[in-house]
Image (cartoon, helix red, strand yellow):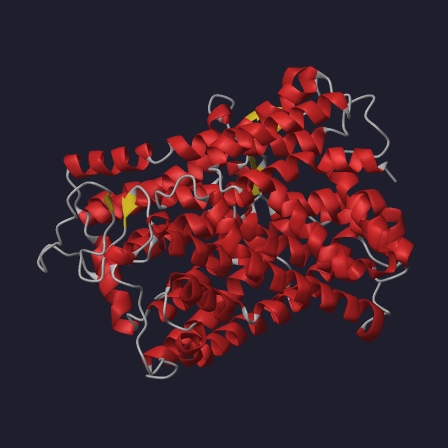
Length: 596
């Protein structure tokens, strides 16, 4: 185990982030450059990381930041294209036909739509799409971000068609293939089984997430003198039905089909059933709940984009500008036309991820269709994938998959929306200007967030690196050594820490799955169940992942409020980690001690 001083040094960048971002509420654009500088000092002074490795890790981080900003820009452009075409007003009216109660809209959009988008796309797409849509429906921007981040957390374990399991679990476990084979599994079989147990833990804990999300929104964004419980109680039946309707197909698909489809089947089956019951007149709350009047909202709820009001157009307009003029009934698109860009987006995302040959080609790989091998021509390969295999002569590599990342399909959906909604050249220009103007702040923050992460991850990769491993490995090892036999209860915390820092459940799983396996073996408990704890913790860690929060805030014009959002997530995070930890320990020691 690393020395205490080494552990404290590894923790230093994270302590700086916590103090500046959450404690002092500095904007990420100020806090993250300081944290990055601390990481550089620690990497050079304690980990003896050569300057070229620090620079290479930072360059790789900037490339990842560019990929995230591509998604954010696509989401903003689609939103403003729909605003200019009057589609947002029509969507607003469509939801009002089901229910104009904000609690119901949280369940339908922040839970079911967001979990579906997570299942088909991942990579920050749910918050990037759903938060602006909630904003357009009249939610305070801060409430839109909180709801979108919390609502889709349970689905992230199987996001992007199962990537956190197929890649996050499998890749690091290949180094342990011999040990896994001794238990009668291939690596793929073991990872799939661990994914099934993760679905069980997530399902039991996550069944309450619709209620937790609604309760958080009501408590934080309701009237100051309004008690939370009376406002939440009428929507409990809806939240319970929604949670169960999601979790049952989610778990069954993970257990009997595999990791690719749980986060698609759950919202499709559960959402369809819940909407059907609502349309039939069931599950509606007896009262009506909405946000306080706009002029009573605190300043930190709203940023550079004004939300649609109760009696307004339902479309966001830049602060300081005249509100958008409501379209006349004759000019308003039909509900089908208004939703069609989102339908196109979902079809494109599903097609580019579920159809393997297409997914392979878009990621620059060879694909075989009807016995014919296809590959991307060299002339367009850099447009499909920008890749650097050895940055500055180091082993650090990075790539941007322009053709595969959801930002491209968000942009294409926005382009398709232009003729569908009949936008003029002036309206198209307005949409592009509004979307582009919202990227400056988050670009500055992300340009330091991701490089900081890469430095911490790569600090153990260079020649002459300490035997203890990278900063992230040192932190995880210290956690395991501290808790000993109680470790199964703490395994989710390690997963959440990984996602908090890296911003990706997949990267968290890649970083810590092998460690979780080895710690479980040393403690003498089920390796699959401890890895399930890793997966469940990594899932909820998504709600406080710094660059996810920054990106989500950018889509609603709330730059600089990262610390506020993370603060609001701490209670739901504590619930999820405590419950997931208790379940992991209960399964490992009492109910399922015989699991491999």
